[in-house]
Image (cartoon, rainbow, N blue to C red; front, side, top):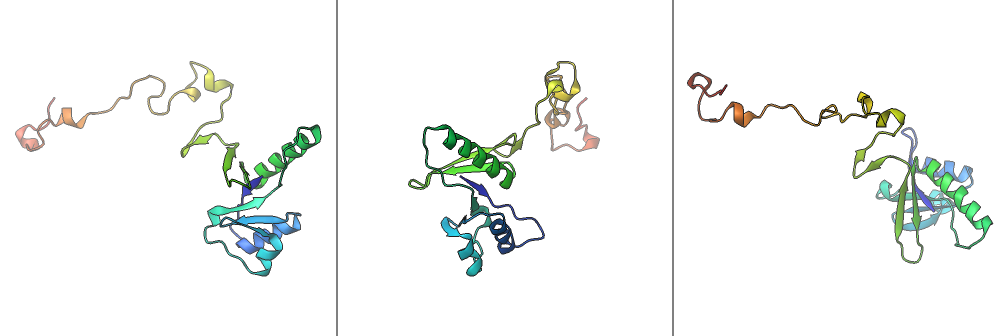
Amino acid sequence: MISPVKIPGNRTFLEQIAVFRQQGYMRIQVDGHLLSIEEAIDYDYEPKDPERSFLVIERILTQDDEESYQKLADSIEIAFQEGQGRCLLENIQTKEQIHFSERFEKDGIVFHLPDLYFFTFNNPYGACPLCEGYGKIMEIDENLVIPDKNLSVYEDAVAC
């Protein structure tokens, strides 16, 4: 279980992982390499790609008992907190990652958090922002207004 490293604007990467060490975390994954936080601090390790820096929350062996499920649930909650709503599960053997997000977004599109008013038919809150709930977009078609672009305004280029 890993979460993306989010560095506040007033800290460097090394200062942030020192904070992680104070919080009790032991490992960090930087540029695809698994390091102990002590190693990263001792060698002044700076990532080549900060977007590929992950805090290792927990290494989990899957077992079918209640204690393992509780530990997994706690780790997921911590991963979402540390990753500001993002969490990843990585299989150590295959390096396959599964991404999870608490945010309402997909492919760069951010969606509104649904609530009761969102589904009310006569409330503008749930209406499409483009057509404002009418189902049609009122626009001016430039090709219909000026059918012949070679004419000037004085030569009646604008069609009524």
